[in-house]
Length: 418
Image (cartoon, rainbow, N blue to C red; front, side, top):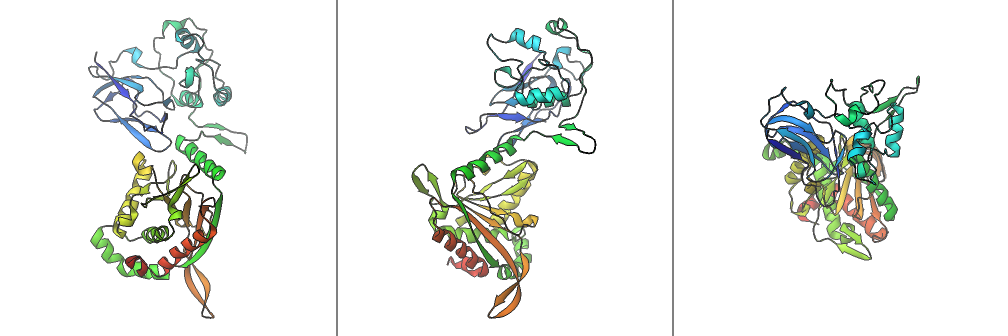
């Protein structure tokens, strides 16, 4: 028997742990080299774990939903076995509290359920100590319970001696798919644990509101000049560059014009210091199935309209597929959030720490405007810029937003950097 370990990829220094999602293979099934076995969710990205060698999946060391760290062994592959002939011990079953306690060092918390896990176990009539924990000191986490509830009951498998000596359970646990639901007549409820990414987003939003003096300034922009230019060059642009000319590249270029004119908008706070960044890395907020992510366009001042459109399109695909890398999500000196794609008319965006300002873009709608004493219809977009009032005064914030407005209402300014 030749065993090869399947390990968690090396996580970045800022990521202490990650969560296993659902295994794509079961113990005893054949796997091919480089076949994706499972996905691992961190608070930033989702990583795929391929099989390091071909063979049979001999053992699942950590069940789906478990918490893991860098280089931790999560499964083992027998490179010499044949599917269907694997030893019975290769099938992993939940370890009882008796077995866990027998192997756990004195003074550990093995088998002890965390409060949320204990409540979930009670909801599913699971006896205390019936699960082995993957949390710190062997504690049972909510993920352990959900994994056990979702897992199908294994066929009759020779039990370890320690389990045979334990009291028999009257009935097997029901195989209820996660997440847990409570059907209370015509008022059903569903309890779904936050993904690691969603929990991290929530943490950062609370951090932003707790540590920044957030204020928002607004302005309205006549988008007719941009729409006219876009319509005029759309066909040639797409033919030349292989990507559609969208509105976001105009907003990005207008933001860079304002950041150059008012550098404090591109700065950040570090203790009692203000750090002025001599580069322009713009984060573009993108919605994904797993939550909000903000990939970063690097050195935007050196990018063309086509470069910006291509990279934003690539970010959208990667966000949808969960393929964004750590590097693509790190850093940034300013952000843009486009709620307009969902129909938002107005909002007050929250700053993305450690940045000090963020631009909110909204839906462009025809509105009645007064020009030279006459009421006319114009396509109007309301811009909102939230900023950290600790370092950005109202003057710089308002004038910065006015600079963006002027650039969008006269896009030729962007060509001449004026």
